[in-house]
Image 1 (cartoon, helix red, strand yellow):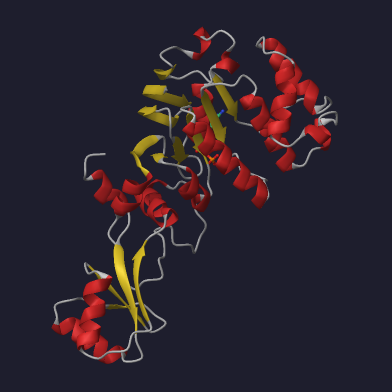
Image 2: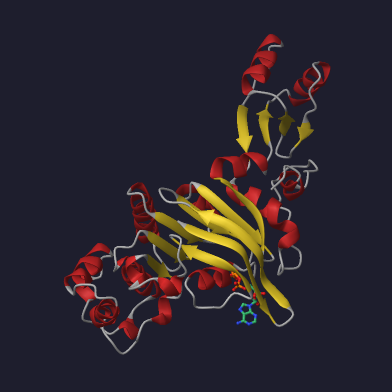
Length: 326
Ligand SMILES: Nc1ncnc2c1ncn2[C@@H]1O[C@H](COP(=O)(O)OP(=O)(O)OP(=O)(O)O)[C@@H](O)[C@H]1O
């Protein structure tokens, strides 16, 4: 378990992390999300005692990082995959780490095998690709067989097979009862991996919730209909109290209705449907809606409010979530 209480970090006048309090629990994968510059890396660095908080505390299983003897046996982390010594082999890099934490040398071979680097164990790290470096960083995190693992952008540079592997590894580690805390900008990947989410924006906590609740509370669900008799369908919907919205490509979208209701209504009026589907926004859309006002850097001409392709005016999801007392 990792516990943050009022964690704050200021760099001069810039408040990078602002009064963050949350817990990362064992047995699940907890995703850590936030736009660029939100303070994720700074938070993770403070969790590992690589940066001093301006105020507030971080506890690892009830203790400060500095109080942990042989910390790699409690918490393993992949923060910067390039932090390895380039002139040393993968094996020797891990061996040094193992010796400093009184971890048996045999464990080095085990973790190299686990991450698929046995064949290049004796090669100098400076010749490694981005993906190989990521795997080596993951091996170093696993070295002490810790109960708590933190991964900052672990899929960065990995190919699809590697992404699949790290996803399953994190889930398996969580299923063993370990605490897994992972940041990623790849929302589709996060949606497949994490059970719980911590979302921050401009250093502040925006959400601490299950993945399912986050998507539910920060996105709208609606039914999409497509018919060769669109005009007639629209009239029938209006006559029955629904508010269909034209959504381009000949489709209509209806809020507050089920596919069963609308399918039966269409059948009663002998209307042909080419599409009748329940739609829910993705994690990516929910995330963009929630963090839109907390985005520090965005490109000109892009819609940070998340264009769902609909003509409808969406509510400000972050506001509605925060209105629920987050
Ligand atoms: N050493 C530092 N000195 C000054 N400002 C810093 C320092 N480290 C981070 N910052 C600032 O603190 C803020 C948070 O940065 P941080 O790297 O923690 O964000 P992040 O959420 O990890 O971003 P990204 O998703 O882009 O990696 C940013 O505005 C950054 O410029």
